View 1 (cartoon, helix red, strand yellow):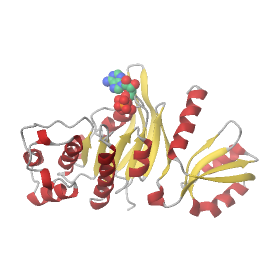
View 2: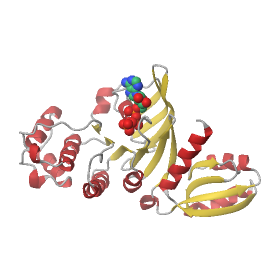
View 3: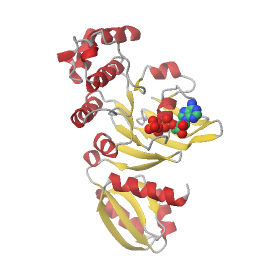
View 4: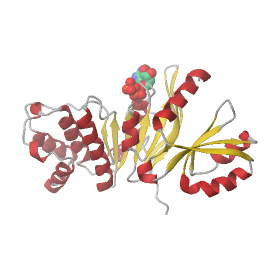
Length: 307
Ligand SMILES: Nc1ncnc2c1ncn2[C@@H]1O[C@H](COP(=O)(O)OP(=O)(O)OP(=O)(O)O)[C@@H](O)[C@H]1O
């Protein structure tokens, strides 16, 4: 049996009233990987996360968590998910530990060993017996994630988790997310409008814009060598068609001057040349991958193209 993705979203569309918030959304998250959704305010990030958690019903399309359809198995799906979508709310006169114990009672059979494991990974031990009223925002966010992890979910969902944190706390937070994902073999779906954050935390990421998701690429730190290629071909239409059929190539984009841009690992270079010989390559240029540049190019294009 082949490994199924922890999260699979297929052709999801969401309308609210007359407004189409999500046009067609498809992506998957493999076990142990962190997937980032980048998008400007109002792009629909929270709507997507809400649909994955079963809080919002898609108008059409399917969402599966661990192979289970969210639409009909919501209760079982929620046992596999830990989600932090709204700002966490705590009682300031209770300690962090009292909140953890309260959280663990909601799930039933959480052992004290599990609580200790989660606290250690989130580096919460030193202040867990202090009242939450004395916590910084970063500490509160860590406590909220600790609660989300108690029941051993396989998918962690975080909506703009570093909002409001100072730069030092942001860096600490990013490192923590990556270490949780690898230690617990967790898959993480994270939304943000901070490009650098997504680039630093995520193994894969995509831009949500005008209701569709464009995969921008895979992170250097996992895939080693992602590069942006710019090619010119005698038959650009044929070239794009061929590129779109390759699983190792991310979102080929054709610009008005006929050039084609896409992201690929350099190790596939010889396969690429072979492929492109069928479409008559005139030139190939290589640029180092810059998420900010890719994002700006795409948002500019969409503003100019009228959607
Ligand atoms: N219940 C609702 N009724 C009407 N419109 C809604 C509703 N929920 C969301 N929307 C609209 O859907 C769009 C996407 O909202 P959403 O909150 O998902 O975006 P977002 O990318 O998370 O934005 P932000 O970064 O500001 O949180 C917005 O235009 C918003 O106004």
